[in-house]
Length: 359
Image 1 (tube, one colour):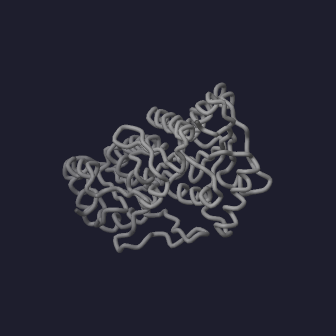
Image 2 (image 1 turned 45 degrees about the vertical axis):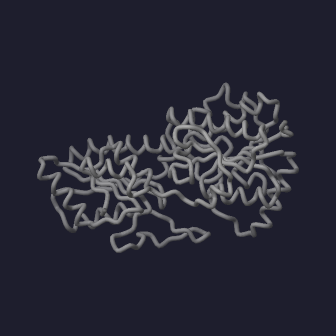
Image 3 (image 1 turned 180 degrees about the vertical axis):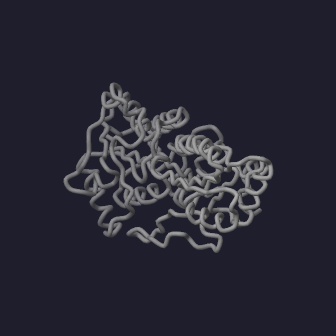
């Protein structure tokens, strides 16, 4: 029999579509068990800052409002890296905040980085937790899909549908730069769905001349336009990142690879004009897709089920078309899941004529 009577829930890392559907599912499922639910504001800041930032949640927060159908996070999130304080100091304040609220456990909705950071806080503070994976990058370990990825793919493929019309009107090769950091899942899925001619991902090297050759073959076929998708984490042909900027914890701030490609293609081929669209944070928005809403609900319900069964320090996953859960330490140990260059996605792209880099 579970001893849980009060739980906290927070969203951590970059936002995405489907977060509010997860929160709703957890609140509804936990309320049916008679538990109290405390929504922690702005990720871990809600427990480490003083005064504490939280809101008591009930099904009424989501039953008569549009929130479950909206992107973003009802609770707010935190995506600014580790604060300039020690893990011990932050973990201590985190634990003190959780105990002040009387939390018996915590549901953490986050990506691979959040699972690492927040699980460390929870471990050091002695707080039980269950993780729920979310990210538009789809790079969280073990799970086949994370909340937010399907909607981000839809946003990107919709953009490609729009770009192909203007590309056709102006004899252009249009370049779409998408997010994903070091993982090419979003770029590859979007390129296939949007029927792009070229897709560049961080995991596969490429040659500018090969891109030009693909554009020449398109021109020779009688088509006057082309679409190129590039992931923000792709490096220049010489292996260096376009941007040398870093954030406050030393991570490279990606962006600009689209402009680099445009300039290089223009130097070598004049038959297509190139233009660049950097989709940016619109990829984090958009109404959650049906799949993301379903996945969010299943993840939230399973998280509460795990807590009731006393199975904590786990992350819920969607693997082989069914729900499962894994030890959070195993998830963290696995690290970021990159796109497999030999995956069926890459194979299908090549077999249908898309240039996706060098084999």
